[in-house]
Structures are given as structure tokens and as C-alpha cells.
Amino acid sequence: MIAPSAGLLCLIVDDSRTVRRIARTILEDAGLRVVETSDGAEGLEACRRHRPDYVLLDWNMPRMNGIECLKAIRLEFGADQPRVILCTTENDPEHIVAAMEAGAQEFIMKPFDADILLGKIAGATATAPAPAPA
Image (cartoon, rainbow, N blue to C red; front, side, top):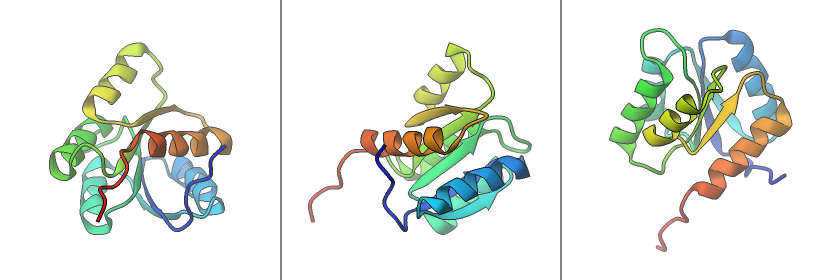
């Protein structure tokens, strides 16, 4: 598995404290910096404030769900940054298609382990275009 570059920032947006704690541990152990929020509205504000490289975004949350947050992120920041991994317990094809159409680079099922999460981070990195030359 390709390890994400150390020092990159991942925003975890999930209303479950347990999921945030597990994801934080996995990501920090892999060398990423982490910021957490508990709903989509807070997540969008954290994107504005922190400009994360990655967002691990839960689908089902209060105030603003993951799809609404993802659409707002794409509208405000564009199609490629930050790289978004939508996270849910829903595994039907309609959810996966909706996530990708809304602009997610990856889709992950709960529960996940370190190999799965870091694999999805690597996959999101691989789907992002190379930066423009300076």
C-alpha cells in the first residue's frame, strides 16, 4: 500500500465520536495531521479555515449531511481539492454513484480498518490530477 505523505492534513467530519477517534488514530499513525468536526456545516467551515488535503466525510449527519457538504465543498473549492472520501454504512450502488457524481474521489464503508482507510487515501491521491507546473 502507498502511504500518504507525512504532514498532509485530513479533516474528519463524522457525528460519531468513536469513528472520529478510530480514524484519527489511523491517520496520525500514518503521519497525517488531523482536524475533526461533528457535522457537515462545521466541516464546510473547517475546510474554509484549514484547507485540508483530504476530507473523510460521513454521509448521515445532523444539520448538513455528507452529500450536501460535499456539494458545497465542490462549489466553493472546485472539483479536485480537497480530495474527499465519503464514508457510510450504506453500500447500495445508488449511494456509491451519488457520492461519485457529487465529487467524491473515493467511497468507504463502515466499519473500516487501517488498511482500508489508508488504501482509500492512496486511491484518492491517485485520482487527483498532478499540480500545474510553476
